[in-house]
Image (cartoon, rainbow, N blue to C red; front, side):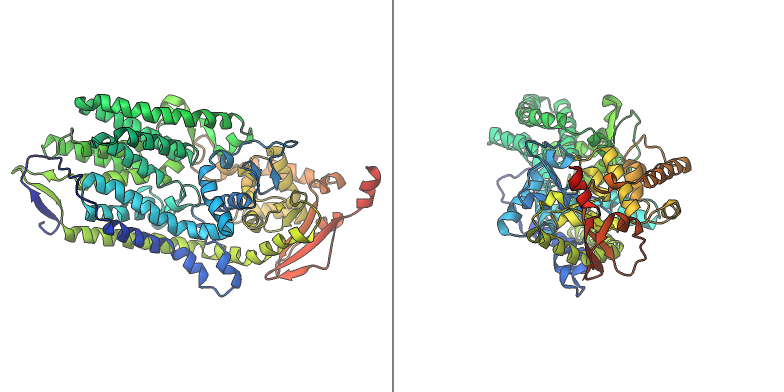
Length: 629
């Protein structure tokens, strides 16, 4: 056992702080460099291809989802479009056509933090996303290291903690490689904290906020300034990502209650902290609530905000937190630790936080996509708790305190890196085919961007029909032109539910879908990603988003097929002209029935671009429309 644990002190003091000693950041930089290299593997894996366009293609993490929509919004901001924009329809906020708030326009700070430097440097949204992954892996590592080292006062332990916390995030959520091995449904793989740009661009703010709170409660100098900084960081979190700022608020609440109850001498200090952070939170939440009040009605369906008081006490993160709390309780009973120890309180607060965010609906009666707490913050919270517990210096009966030996820390670091490598490799392999296809799409996207200078029409007057909805989903991340329909069109709010459904029906009609083709689609393997989401919503096609979601039944499918076939039977010139198509992109080599499209539009001879045919299309009988006008 002496290889695992080593005696470090015979003192009866459980709290040993030496704030005067300078932190050796070498260990933090070492851990951050390792995480940065790991994070780059999926992109490098894509770059090994010889296609010239692969250099500007993003290695999307298909197991994290929604990255294409975030890239589309970043591209719109880089182009100088307003905060309230919809890159999928091409609609922007204008005095004569105001647009409602969306999840993207409300949580705007990380978006502008990416878009403004990209615009200044003259780089594209795809390049910005490529850079963002290793950058945020590095910054997040240093933020975690700073928090752990200031608490444990051990650089080696903090560096190992960085690897444990960030490499095991998916595992702690019961997701990723472990879920794949168990053949269960997964929502996240790779490193969930690096989903771009949410929560990647804002993730470091959470450990920085925790660091500042800890500094305020444990250091006697510059407390007012520290509390101001903490309030400012919380305000940034409010406009960054809902799941991060609400988790930060829950953690602060738990920590304050524990600290207030355990350390009577610090009660006034806790109240001072809450007052200053509360002032910063209020200053942020007032405009935040104003923006929320101007959201579109469709935003609630996208958020899957539902009424529920169902409890959740058995998620993977909560089970880990319960084990940590049990260990602390047993240690206190045996006299190994003191519950008044500030580090013990901190560890307990991180272990308790998942129980609060995953069960707040008991009080509020509302719950919104709890899987995002499980995969993006609660999992990292319990892992931080474990690392703090490791550095507590547990005391045995003889009065000696014990900690992990350097040899044990080395093996833990190796194990964490190995698991992180497994997560990265499996995620890259899982996403490989989709990313290769996305890379092939880049040639068409670039050609579409060139059309801006070749046409006198405004970009929002031109609509593209991609016969493959997957290609349509990725187009707005590169091209400023709107698409007829794409799966992630649902997450923006410029279209009503009715209009989105109509656009989907047009997509199906133009691409030759009849009852037979639709029936075959529902028995295929791409039901989740494509048209089913447009028909029934993401919350009914992805488990875990909506606790009240009803499974899609055979009757639901039959009803949808009936509505669509009636729509197709009554298709007319008015429907064909609104919205009016300008371009059509079809994959080469796939059998497509475009007879419905050709009935209403005239295609030119077409241009071959890579693996696609690119057509200019003109609505038939346009002169008739002019005479009617």
